Image 1 (cartoon, rainbow, N blue to C red):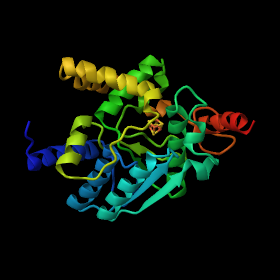
Image 2 (cartoon, protein in one colour; image 1 turned 120 degrees about the vertical axis):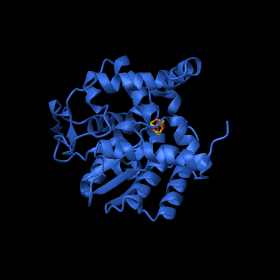
Image 3 (tube, rainbow, N blue to C red; image 1 turned 180 degrees about the vertical axis):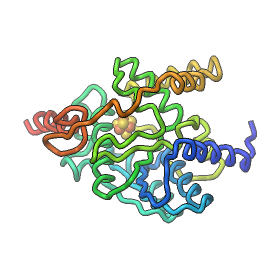
Amino acid sequence: MKIEKTSFNKYVEENVFRTINEYNLINQNEKIMIGVSGGKDSILTLHMLHNYRLKNDMDFEIKAVCIDEGIEGYREEGIKTAKENCKKLDIPLTVYSFKEEWGYPLDDIHDVYKSTCMPCGVYRRYLLNKISDKENCDKIATGHNMDDEIQSFLMTFARNDQNKFPKFTPILDKIHENMTPRIKPLWKLPEKDVGIWCVINDIPIHDEECPYSVTSLRSEVKMFLNDIEEKKKGTKESIFRSFEKTFTIKQEKVRLNTCELCGQPTAKSPCKACEITKEIKSIIIH
Ligand code: SF4
């Protein structure tokens, strides 16, 4: 199938800009931090926010942060592409690592839990929030696309975790004084279109799979959804529309506490990052 570059770019930009405008994701004079891994989703988010600022003649600050989990032979390439794209767009980028924060890379603790993605996700979310709070950022923009949201949605059912339902929106409110609201500009953009955009525009991206992704429930849910979509086109979009209409649980109902050990926002204290750090240290030090 031949894709016409100009009209495809227009479609992608309109899709993302519409989400930003409809949900009021960005305001004048805000400081927006983007979590950039070097993968296609975060790279598209970076370019879209840059274009949005230019084309709407807006004045807001963009800074990029790359988290180095410590996955040898994998993360280095992502950092390289993140740097390349940030340099091209003249966006400042800072790299923070698990090793600096906790004293060990992900590679050293990958087999402590059944899924490596669990500690990785907990640490990454923790670090992004801590950095954004320290740097007085107004929002954290992430590269979650429509497929990611559908996967997360089905995963909450699989885990009977209704507490996560309020997270299915393109913007998460500030529900704790140290919590930076998250925005998801690609919320309504299918994953395949993110990939096509990067290819037809010759954008450097890191498109390898993380070696630990096979251990995650997400990767199984992703395969399951792709399989159904292959057989019945439009299934993903239908699931997305259903949860968009059905789940209107107000975020105000969810209030966060403060971790007694680190002071970061948490549902219950101590926070998950402090809890797993204690467990991990007791295993790797003994
Ligand atoms: Fe971390 Fe899992 Fe993502 Fe790899 S796939 S970077 S382990 S969350």
